Length: 180
Image (cartoon, rainbow, N blue to C red; front, top):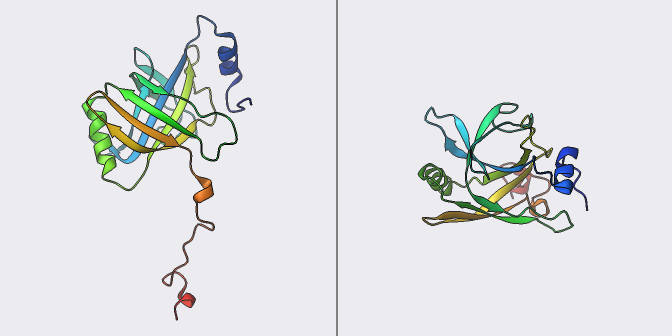
């Protein structure tokens, strides 16, 4: 099944595989505990390449929309979820040779109840003015494990089937008529 979120240029790059166009896979990890030295919210941004990448984010990005940001070169592996009818698509992400800064951020996130969000954006080496997928895939990272060589985690899309509907919890505090 074709993926309608991919740009025409990216579809052509996948189909034709031209030698002068490289598909650059990027990840952005976000969590409320990820802050810079000034206390401002920040994200971990990595690109699967041998050099850093400076590219523009989409207008709907949660941090730094429409700005040029730097993705740090890092080896990582991910398998994109299939475009099918699976109830909750899930992927495994492995970051190799992580820095102390990334481990520090992940340790801080482990002490929180908030989930780590991961956004996947593909860029073309010939067009860094925006990702070639709109909207980019955003997943929630779960089951994170780390050792001295790598960080591995499972990421899945929001499980809409297990969300409360309506999103309110009926309690005696919010609905006094329930108490007897």
